[in-house]
Image (cartoon, rainbow, N blue to C red; front, top):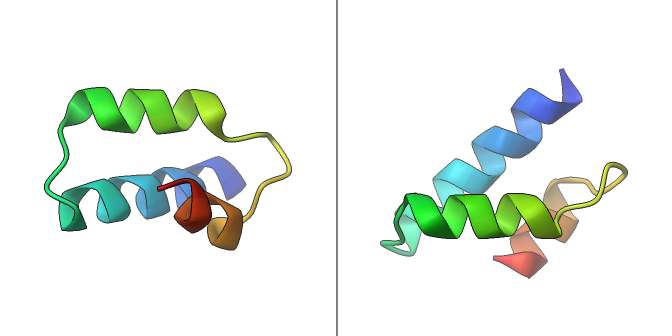
Length: 44
C-alpha cells in the first residue's frame, strides 16, 4: 500500500509541473524505500 501512495504522489507532482513519463521514472529511482510523501515532494 505504501508504494501505491508514493506512486500517486510522484504522478500528481509531475503532472502539476507539466513533466513527462521520463521525469516520473527518474524521480522513482531517487526515492528510497522509507521515504514518505514529504520527502518525495522535496525531490520533485
